[in-house]
Length: 151
Image (cartoon, rainbow, N blue to C red; front, side, top):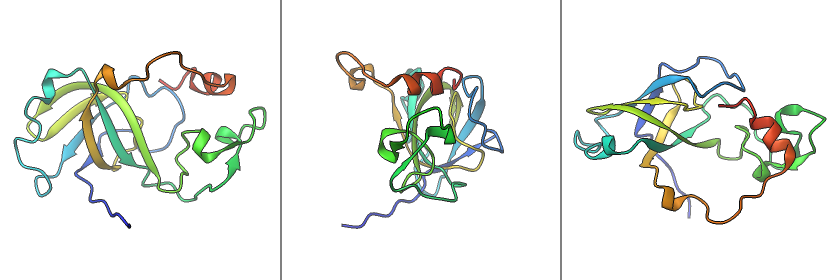
């Protein structure tokens, strides 16, 4: 079965260019398209401190279907595209949990969303800790190094 997705909104006011680190203080807006969602679609959302944003890496110009060094760094091991969060994924889809600063109608103000200005937003969900992983979290050392300054 083939799926197609229509963006429900757009990221506005974020970085214009892809920079790998220091996304934690970046503030921007998600402007929900009133042609896609009704005005009350955000009702109750302001009761949450964080949201999950599903967006597309709209400027990604290549696709990795196998392995690569994360960020092209040869000191980190080659790993499969499904073992990293690089934007050059087969469907160019990003998912990030970020802070919800304000809700004004169909405009969401957020902090810590690592999406570029103009990124199409496919979905927004409230972050619920009960959906977070249970038990011990395991990750390789290179990923901790990569993420040390990301947010």
